[in-house]
Length: 455
Image (cartoon, rainbow, N blue to C red):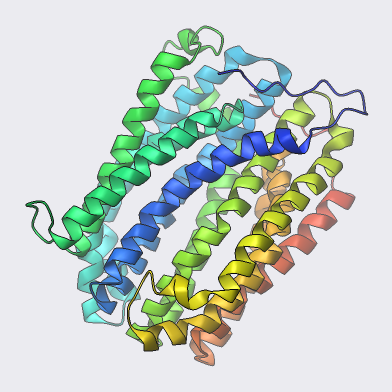
């Protein structure tokens, strides 16, 4: 598989739309596979009960709050790998990836033990419904084994995105999605001789899908990657100094990703206090929201790595044009998706549930998230490009500021006014507007052109 080589800039060279799409579409498929785990769980559990649907939302969000620490580290690792790839310093890529795997496996063990001990007390405080609480813990007791597989897996994702060999992520997407669909069908409902395990079966299926994905990535890397070129043969032992230098970049993205997911979790805590039905609606709408967000995430990830590659290869003057170019493609693709969703919300919602009343109550929230995604299609590209410059600290400050506004709004409309789920979801619109304004200001006045990544 040929490696995508960023052009050496002469202040006239520019990435083409084909270059951007070449990197982005495999990322879209890989994100679709990761998202598919949640979507399929939600779709199947929506036909089990509203309690199972709500509990999978609370348990799934708790899991992903912790998972985002690993994902945040992988973003920092990806930025470093992309910069080294742009510089042509390939020998530093392998050691960077290996240090990440060791570090995240250790982190997975620590967080597994933490969740095993403190998960129940935390969820007991958060959940006002006993039924939701017990179902959530039934889900989490099995789901947390996925830490070990998903934490290691994100480093392989960072590696392939960083060196822009993203086609492997397409195959991995298919492997993970297919595994999860088959096991969900068998374990949730009890087909093919398996017992009907309900929400517990969804958790087990997700863990096995993540394990299968990791095994595939390890095997592919061993067979297809040039170990000598990328410095994998240079690794001798754990390098604390290298890890600490990587953490100088990654620590900000780790905290940033944790804050993002934690505030979204807070949103669901506020909705859970409205009613079990409101929580079920919010979980279904969240599932649709995540699907619509896939191209946004893919293009923002592409912006992150292409900006880093661009600066590394001497093209700082072209960065703003590159961001505008990626934003334009993202906006067009997202508009097609949200238009279809806004026109046919009932057909989409019927995939998740067969209760007409629940479907009708969910439609206003679907329309709200369509507006939020439209704004995000540009906002997230500009924002993620900040991290691509290497200035993850500035990105963190913007995220904290945005999240403070977000939390205040959620508290006001959700806990104080006890507004409808649709009104609560307007917090997403506010979030992306504030984030976009702050990111544009950064690129106008920030000193990002000379930001160095010393690893």
